Length: 194
View 1: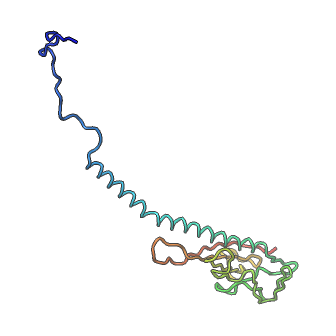
View 2: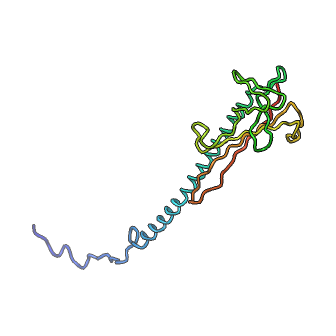
View 3: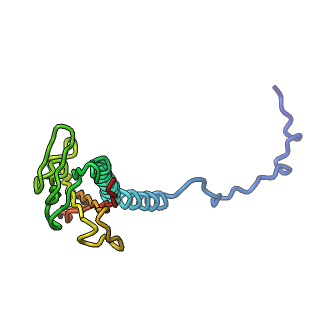
């Protein structure tokens, strides 16, 4: 092919200026390293919180279990016979704050095939150690029953009323290596003689 030099005169072609300071796309190495350091610090901080949140969830679980065990015993107490006619006292009374309930003096208890004389221990309300509650190792349970005629139950002073208090104790999980103090959940209610 033949070109005619006078048609493409170099004087008429104008060159566009090229700038060596064109804006760069992306991030510099310093920016990337700074962002990586900030993200690492954030993740390490979040990881340090996990043991505390795990302990809080476990504590809530243990407290719920203790409350369940206390309510379970209260339900049993509601179904125990304590009647005036016929005279049958299987609910019993605790002699003091550290004693399990026994059949009161002058009374007796008949529950199914079980007969308990006055002063006899009521096995269904016996103190349970941390290995005695089937399926719930680590939880201990006590039942204390107050005769509202002898020791006023708040504002109630009535021989036909008793206060049943169930305390469940457990050792909470901690987020540190130090052992936490034992925790006790206490649930109580009043029962009327039927």
